Length: 261
Image (cartoon, rainbow, N blue to C red; front, side):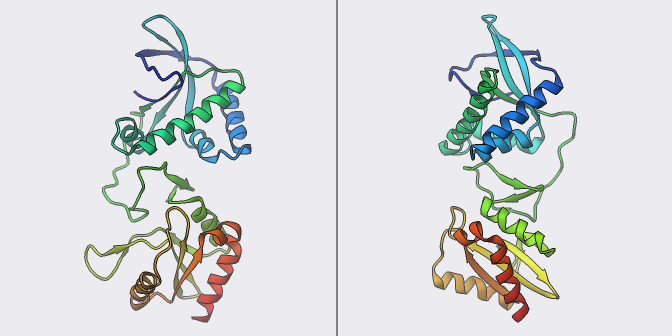
């Protein structure tokens, strides 16, 4: 079992005893907690409750103290992700951010009447791990930040998710963060979005947010040249600020560029 968060910062050994609430009461409490966090703009903290199947357990330690623990059985990939943070395999920022997110979660639960001392997780052995030795989607991940997932896909930022949803609203064939093999072995690039429209294939890139730092004009030109040389019809770059505030407008401009190509 991994201790993901200790509210009193003096972790001791303890044993889970039994569910602190029945299934229905737990579901309602965590749903209200998720809504509180979302309304306050704490979307990453809320997403932890959405994607992980947490339950509240009564627990006790060597001193017979009565504790409440927020506990989840997690699949293999999630377990390994948290283990790396807990054991210090990632940088200190990742550990501090995870602690901050669970502080927000437990504080919101406390507002609703339950004092949670620990947040823990355990590997779910009821389902065998999915064997995925390689991946063609979002190979380049950041261990210093919780994964941004949406509809079962990995993204590097919420800005990407906004653009992805806008592309889907247009009914387009979209490949988000695919691994592109650039005509030779071990030569890889990861465009943000490859989009197909009326027989033409284009790339939509976002630049300017945390995971998309601005590149020099020469680097952008070279990257565009490499893709267009290999048959990409259009390679368009849009600023992250506009992608966030007007994703539908960005997609409309991109489609127009594909239409003219």
